[in-house]
Image (cartoon, rainbow, N blue to C red; front, side):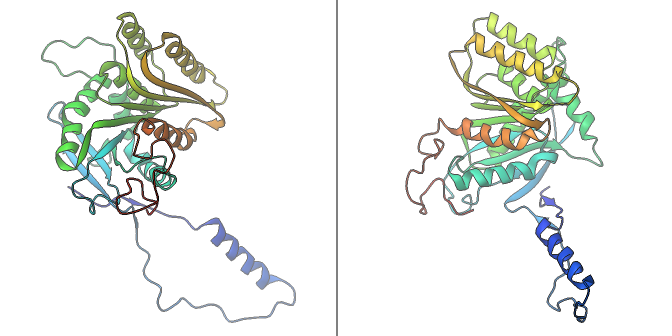
Amino acid sequence: MRTPVRSSGKPSFRLQGRIALAVAIALAPGAVSVPAAQPADTASTPRPYVIGNSQLVDFRSAINGRNYQLAVHLPWTYASNPTRRYPVVYFTDGTWDFPLLVSIYSNGLFDRTIPDCILVGLTYSGTNPDYGSLRSRDYVPTGNAVPPGHVPDGAEGFLRVLEHEIVPLVQSRWRVDTSFRVLQGSSLGGLFTLYAMFSRPGLFQAYVAVSPAIAPGLVDSEAAFHKSGRDLSGSLYLTSAEHEFPGDSRFLEKIQGFADSLRQHRYAHLRYHYRFLDDTRHASAKAEGYARGLQFAFQPLEGECGDGRPSREPSSEDPCPRDR
């Protein structure tokens, strides 16, 4: 099933200002009376705003029997370059963050800090899904051992769906560069992103975790991973907000403690950067965190404008065109 992704709009501050100014002039002493403006005959009926090159795909998991939805945004060059393959950015909480990620991606594309890629938002289908409870079920590690033949719950169960169903589905439907995948998320989605990095190293080549909820299961996974002597490869961009939850410093302290642990353990092949986002809160940190994180994630892709420098003037062959 494919349907357009839609978002509602509100009058701009500029438009509101013009309305207020017109009212003030009309009420001013000595103002000249003018006939009331009539609607233009050519004005169309208001209609929903559609995010271009985007579609929704619903599917039922054969692994856990649950209903999921993918919000997919294709590059504007996708149709005009039928042989080209694109890296994929997978991100959690697609219902909430899809418009934000499309905007960040478009701006990065214009600035040549992000290459053409496919965006895949992970979310849920069905009638009135309870996103809060569903994401809590799928993004949080349980720490429970899984008996043979049983489907695991929590982050491990959803990671299996992502690895064995969602990634293959995306690769079968669209022209994907299978050598480079990014996974990113915020809050519980950031927790899941970090869990995936330690549980399936190599499945993704870059990770962006914005204000992740650091759960005991994640701390245990990182400690066990380090103790085993295994190494991590790829890139990780980790952020925290100065005012995650005002009045409660524990959320921030846990992120900072985890960031210090990663720095001390010095994984040899992991490009790692931790950034403290000042004067912002938990949800507001997503815009800056994702924008900086994606730029960091794509820096290793030389020739794809990942280093922030234009390789040449825009042309039909330019991998990072300025035209959106």
